[in-house]
Length: 119
Image 1 (cartoon, rainbow, N blue to C red):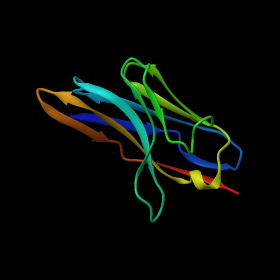
Image 2 (cartoon, rainbow, N blue to C red):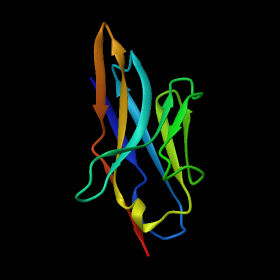
Image 3 (cartoon, rainbow, N blue to C red):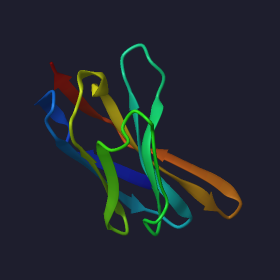
Image 4 (tube, rainbow, N blue to C red):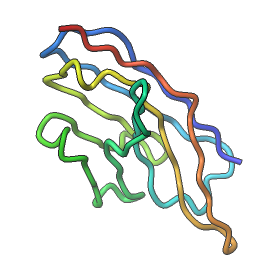
């Protein structure tokens, strides 16, 4: 089992910045990708950004490109720097870790952290 602990959510005005962090612990063998998803009320959960284990493969949703940056600070910690925040970025943000180990697909989620952007 892998535990994901998130931090950094909160309330910010439009145009402001926040940084989210997520640290993985436990049986992290086989984890290949970590990332952030978000879910706004009444909407489906969507990918925001993801990063490979070596930090060289990053993927961003079109809506956050050039505003958000995902990066690793340690082998087991990822961060999401969010700049120029908009009210439509308001959502619960979830950390995700996935991979394969012993032919078993791994997919873990954090508990979520609320990000609220006021206009």
